[in-house]
Image (cartoon, rainbow, N blue to C red; front, top):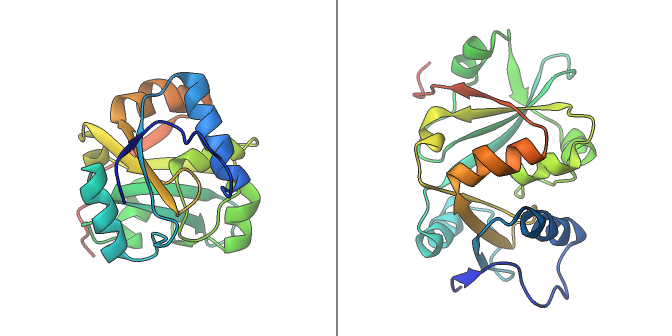
Length: 183
């Protein structure tokens, strides 16, 4: 794995969702770095740690969640080193119970699959069915790392660009929460 700058020149073999992501970032003029790891999809924390060492960013968890009735959906972005406790987040969002969202809804709303969940998947949520929730510690970081909607590449860009350019371009707002990983 090596650190590269910007979109790949050759898109051969890349998924359509990844190609759309690069086009979106380029259209917005977002400067980003990437590392490709097709032989090592980011499916474990060990792989993510190697990727993040190259990108020099803090690992984030991107969790697709829903309420008990499966009528409200959430994308939670939080530091990877914090334990996730559903009760803690449920309380801050005023929801009685949260659980992990079904893969079918993740694909339907975000055009993503498990292991590739990314804030950039919100560009596929035209009906805005998924509510974005970000832990405050993520917003304190200078750089933000995520997948370009495929877990065989990873990218980093300024957190400021996420908040000031990407989310507004998507017409998205977000809720900030303070998670500490307590019961």
